[in-house]
Length: 303
Length: 137
Ligand SMILES: Nc1nc2c(ncn2[C@@H]2O[C@H](COP(=O)(O)OP(=O)(O)OP(=O)(O)O)[C@@H](O)[C@H]2O)c(=O)[nH]1
Ligand SMILES: [Mg+2]
Image 1 (cartoon, protein in one colour):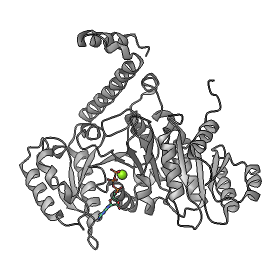
Image 2 (cartoon, each protein chain N blue to C red):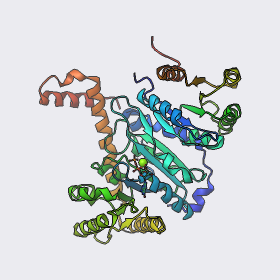
Image 3 (cartoon, each protein chain N blue to C red):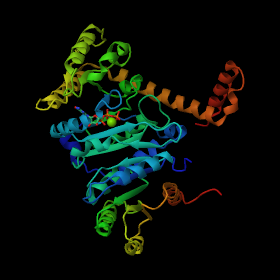
Image 4 (cartoon, each protein chain N blue to C red):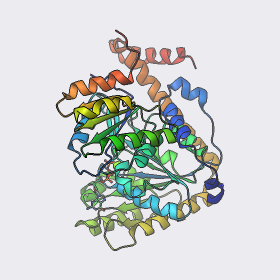
């Protein structure tokens, strides 16, 4: 991984990068396959996930300030949901990051989820790979707060932060089979509201119980949002510690495999969705026949 | 009526006035027509707006203007866009624009001017028309 200082020395052509990201976000499955490449020496990736309105964007704004102060050049990719009916979207994440948006070392890109329903956006793997080819040390990725489909962001990031709020208390028991097992760092945000301490204690108990593959990382539970605390500095430090831990301990081949598998699955999912959309009558038969038709259409696709 | 599908539009508020109901209503109308809309929030400088437009690679910038200095703010925003090699991004303007100033703004290269009296559907239709030059009959 290149040092922050050397990466920052490269000048960023924001116009070219902005356009490149549009091209990639708009790419068809065939185009994506044609342009696909591995990205060596990529930026460190920090995923921020959690239910809608938990305060992810606000927290990213504050966190990015700290990461910039650490000396890193930072890109933020923030995803908001597209309407499945009109395809329209309000990309409202960046407005919460206003306090830092004037820093020229920071690049924020808002994306609509479009066809993806895994909390990320179409072609997100390629979007991240494109950023890897630019002078960023770190990419912070904000998911759509879907709450259940965290496998995607887990696959694509190095450090995954789950942001919960005091009202999440009731959800913790229900969630423990899903995303609660995946995060590296837990945040109880809006700690200025009542109930935060209780949720944090419950989380700590659940986290203790859970069996982890990487047993030597104990996921911290951090409360943020209380005025007058070092909340974001604590989070910043925990992220750095985890990124270093990951770099020390993980097998890069495994990471590549997991990311490629996610990439492949998302392209296949989109291909199937395309096929079904183009052939609505294709479902007017038995499920077995419909399945066979889709497989045939997939085979017939020009790559 | 999803005729703005896939279009990315920045709605921005330069100037000092603190009212953004109009900007938000336009943002929602464009969204309902299929656009992906980014809103800057209040009181942004032309330089800031241009940089967001470039980073986000939007297809159009809509400036919502209620303060008196609309001519200067529009000109400055277009100037800042050109500085960033983004003079090709069309700019439209909405708000309280006196009739006497409209010709001048159009001459400066503004794509369209929308006033509060216009129907939202017409505004959306005009944006869509401007952003999709080639349209099947
Ligand atoms: N009380 C309190 N409110 C907060 C805090 N952080 C954020 N908020 C508010 O919570 C609301 C949602 O904040 P966002 O940062 O947009 O949350 P988000 O998780 O990014 O939301 P989505 O992207 O829509 O899922 C806003 O009204 C914020 O002002 C906090 O620490 N305490
Ligand atoms: Mg957000």
